Image (tube, rainbow, N blue to C red; front, side, top):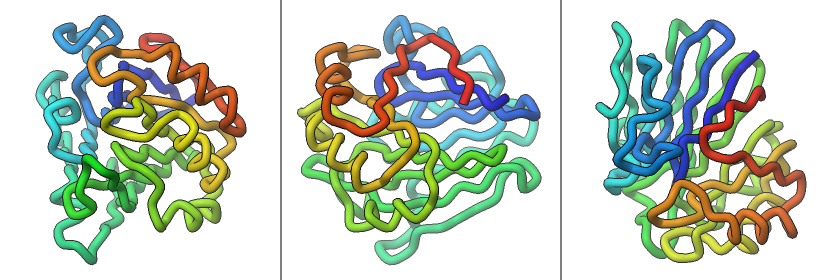
Length: 208
């Protein structure tokens, strides 16, 4: 069973059926940014959506032999190019997609659609509504992770509108507070208007 560990803020960890570990936007832990809780498993793949400091702690965890780090400048090398790449001997496919908003330039950011273990996961990064979101509805996304801190990313209501466009089976709010692992108020507001909302608390293992 594929497992997810929401580490807090915009940081997540996925463990594949084969026991491989993928970190997305490492920085926060369930106990705060200065804790290493949740970063004990050696990374086989690290994905970074953009270069703001709260997404780029790529050495917070140990790296397994052969670990690959794929960042926004690798997956989005020029304004017209969004790359797709296979990792872990083809067991994981990662597709870069658009991400941008009032605090994040389109040229500097990406989201990732990750296909693993028969699941399609959308890690949006720090974004607002994008031109591609209606297209993502054709991807059959199982889980979408959407930011909603109302300061650097969307409001919960805006994130809920994006959830409706994307049409994922499960919509999970993340990046709900600029400095803390979780934002109770934002999570509640998101769940009140987003379809298929699923609230996942930092540090609680979840089977996908």
